[in-house]
Image (cartoon, rainbow, N blue to C red; front, side, top):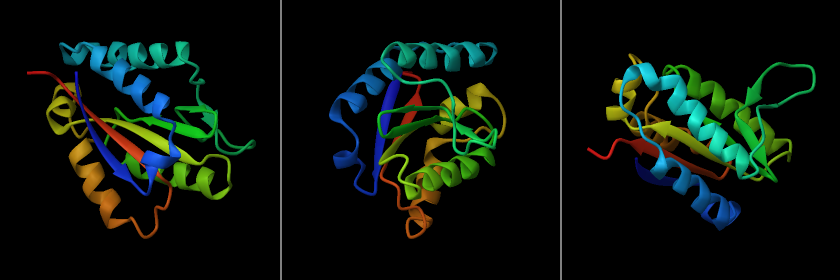
Length: 153
């Protein structure tokens, strides 16, 4: 896979370089062929990240089922392969954890528009996510590394 980075709010300093490097390596090594492989695509990435020390889903509040994909040390990770409306919830979850001092930064994994179309209809995509993150930058203060994933072709 091809990976594109967008750095928001000082993420380059807040996220350990080793985290950035290993997540990039996992993404670059993944193969995706058809829409039928959407679950395998997501599962394969998360499985590899877990072997590197990333957790399973982590709740943002003890009395809620609302969670983020993973946390490692003080860095959260969200992986969005769902519809457009879901990334707003992710942003709220990440900003909440940041403002509660539960995390210091986040890594956000999301397909590029071309791959999103292969995954299904109305799937969240890197291009729109980054544009909207810029619009809401006054409100969304969490340092975040956004990694857009696309097929090599």
